[in-house]
Length: 370
Image 1 (cartoon, rainbow, N blue to C red):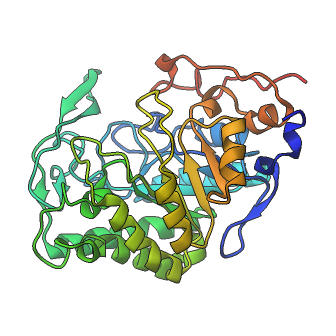
Image 2: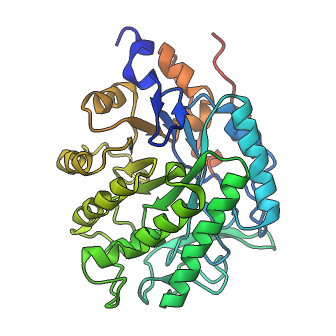
């Protein structure tokens, strides 16, 4: 470790399909709650924020709503209007001018919403109420958390419409100049809700066994890949994160079955969130699952969970991961890649600046003066 710059983490990699990355560092998706409310237009500072961090091999944007129905939290951006698309085009251009690569993470929160944030109220595979709360910013200036409302069970026509919303948002992202999209299939949101037996209690073609619970994901991936090409599609999953009482002992088996057809389809990469970032534990990765996933998915695999350089290198050397995602360290270290490559100490950001506000705590962190 005497020469960090010689480590595998800082070597190039090409995503399946041909997108070249300068290194194996991924800037993980992080909600920063700075979009306009209720328009969902990315912050005026968003282009500078992402461009400052363009030395990452790949940037994954904050989770971005595919529709007003799919919105669960106030001050989060969307990609379903012309105004949003134009704002995102500035972000993509700024990152590319710095030589970076960027994909947009697309989400629909499903049951993790309330009537104030989701147009028409929350929806889910099955009728249920998530034991969780969501961030709300009201027009009168009040901000705080509100308990999730009961979610309406989606019918087949609803499902087809939402598949179309994912497709349309992906088309807008690529039209805005993004290198691709990452489908948010993790952390208890809609795609994840369909995959889990605990949140998917359907008895039709979208529920029941593993194959049926994976049908919604498959239809979304196929629709998006058909529109923008499979080489521009990534997917994030989180088998061990059972947020809001959704822990499912069948989840790893379900994801491994999905990995079979995802590999056949040839999507660009898989992004594995290994543990809940809300907790500061360093739970060891599920190596048995990692090995089984590698056997089934031959494309690049990114891993994420509070990595440092040493643990990242260990993951890469194992051959079970090809990329390592870093989240919180990127907040206060726009030059995180350079700092890690030179062994420069990292700065830290107080939690009070993580969410909401303007440039302060967002674009005003300095780079290290070598």
